[in-house]
Image (cartoon, rainbow, N blue to C red):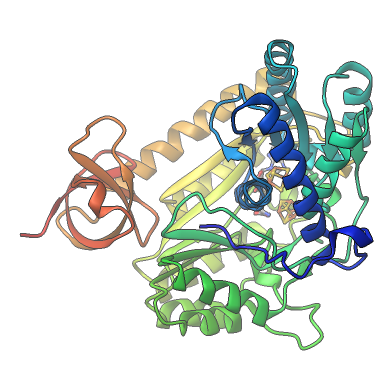
Length: 482
Ligand code: SAH
Ligand code: SF4
Ligand code: F3S
């Protein structure tokens, strides 16, 4: 299920090529020899386990990393007691970091039992110099550390670790390189994320992503479209186009293209039934995009439109470049044009200087827009961001009750909104077996809401019409059409 790299034409004796992806093809082959040798000595296959923290970008990166490992002869495992364990980390909020440090202690104990074990860390957290210093000093049992810009080099780096007897650390500060055509192993046979751009140029004042993911780079439309064509030929019916701010897609290309234009092209691909995307920044959302969404039934009826705060004063300090009124007007326009669209959002509570009045403004927007669902976060101070240096950080005893009030309100509204389609028949993509009841399967509606219906494993990956019979707050129960 992963794309093969043809190595017949590679000359393994003449040393590594300098060009990519040829260089990684060379190292994948060398790594494969090393894995085979180790596996022969042990009398069993070498296992590899990747644990992913964070967002869809990281999930997609992990599929690429797993693709490389399978190509190099590892057997995939879910168990951290594996011969190669890789943590793909997130640093968007401090609790993501703490989870990684907590789990590393456990990995160290596993490694003491299995001397063959190799431990690697990659992803956003590793782009922070202070983190890498801490790993080098206090987590000496880690074998390999790399960042977000060089994941395509996994084979080369792991091969180096196998041949050098010391921790290998390779962090790039940034890159303008986009390496195409590397192997990838999808988690789901029937749906897939597709990167359309990397990095972020927005510098919202609380956010560390632009520092750890680098400057915004769009992929060429033809590369994206041919990846989607190859995916559909391999059984994929739904893609999610991924970028930190998809609405600014294409602006830096030699022949500029809009995100709406890209969606239109993607929608023409035969065999592709559904298109989703993440994430839309309100400041760049165009009328052209609303029109394309409205007119193209393949584009899912879901828009994730992060608000962050409902207070114009706080939005300004956040550097979000829209105010409360503009956001409300945009949300209203979208709902008017596409009435069956589900709107979801991200909200931050306790940004520096947030007063009770500011917080009430957030509640006000939540009540007026009536989101289908919302992710609520407590502001987390990220070193190096402008907000971290702001005075008047809000104390925890004030933030926590606000967070609880917001969550309650979001959930109350969401359970009311997620009732409106009871009785209707909608198409669901069946994604998995129900974890509680073996007679049910779980499907996703175009509007991103889940539905549980009777079914079995043969339904996985199929788009089927279901009658929504009951609302359970944030998901539906359904039945099949006779
Ligand atoms: N690019 C996306 C968001 C990526 S991060 C966008 O702009 O919408 C996902 C979410 O994490 C953000 O929307 C924000 O709500 C939250 N987040 C980011 N930095 C944060 C911080 N320092 N503290 C709390 N939440 C944060
Ligand atoms: Fe972070 Fe803002 Fe970029 Fe989103 S748009 S990743 S919140 S800086
Ligand atoms: Fe986390 Fe990096 Fe995504 S910081 S949210 S994994 S871009």
